[in-house]
Length: 55
Image 1 (cartoon, rainbow, N blue to C red):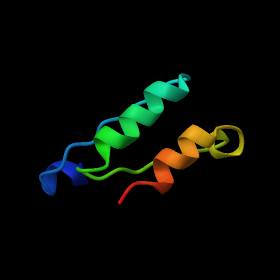
Image 2 (image 1 turned 120 degrees about the vertical axis):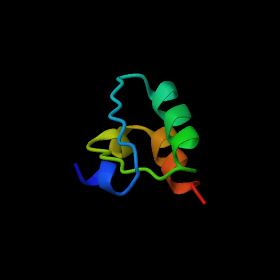
Image 3 (image 1 turned 180 degrees about the vertical axis):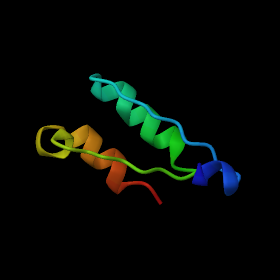
Image 4 (image 1 turned 180 degrees about the horizontal axis):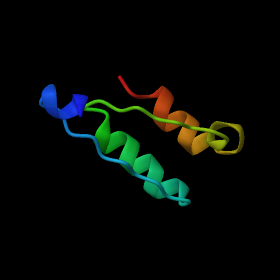
């Protein structure tokens, strides 16, 4: 796997809870994050704001 060759760890995460997803986004962004938002930003200002405020 490419991640192993690069010394990286890939963690898959799924939840239906908006608050849990917001916390996970904020905790994960320091290491790097690939986020497939699908419909979350259309219906969830909290998820949208969590992603937009990553700096």
